[in-house]
Image (cartoon, rainbow, N blue to C red; front, side, top):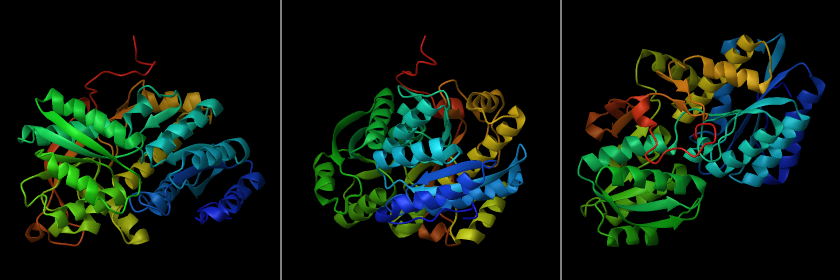
Length: 405
């Protein structure tokens, strides 16, 4: 194993994959190891997955490949969207394989579970794919940073914009796990704070193929807005099937509360046009984003999502903090991360709060009409820039012990 990428294998071979991923660590005690723990094969694989490993390796290469005189190695594994599998991998990585930091962690239930392992082992995790604001709320941990976005910033972006545009009655189709419930909760707070009301909600199992019964309930609610508190393959399926049901043609509108550029590309502009969404990063935002995205595209043949770009940013800043601290000690590294602004081509005007949330500018986009697009990945037009202090403002306060007082 050369340390660049650990093989992504089916569940039956998970143990073998971990042994392969860990072998180099046992033989190279002087290496600094970074783990990419992601959904490599299911509904979130396109927005994170193998592309996240590519992005982290790009950061390691751009940093120079070594820190504190030690080689930097990247390992990866598929958490299968299962908290118990993720916890087992994280524990083995931390305790036996010399991993110092884990990133990605798409799926909030996974991130919350791994955050507890990291807390117990006093290790760093930099969360990019998970969204639940509980990660920096009631479950906050001293060596964890929520890097790219959370359910609060999504609610303050898309939710607030839709209500202000007249969408004052909502019905939620909610992914039935930590992420979906947090997104529904945080968006409900924003909707109500802006004078709107929620007429109902339905919980949908993760990785559902048939949304017909759930969409029928939303249709019967007569709500102006159907809020999709889901992501990845679930968001794609619900939007496609809503179009087949003629829901938008019937007068209701969809609010995609967590939609990625990979989702829009998969849906196509004919289906996704007019959808408003909140992102932390878009590949075609400016010259800097285009330059990095071209490098990523050359390796993957896809434009990067904000999760993949966020993993690059988090890894780069982590390595810079290790170098500045002169140590791999987690407390020293986190202290160094929190001591300086976080500003790069991905994160703009960022700073890390005591609760571990990285507060930075977010962007409200609208999906282009087919006639407005000039290329395959020319998908968004910018509606508004949302300053970080507005985007990450919690409508109901914060339960994190680090900020309670």
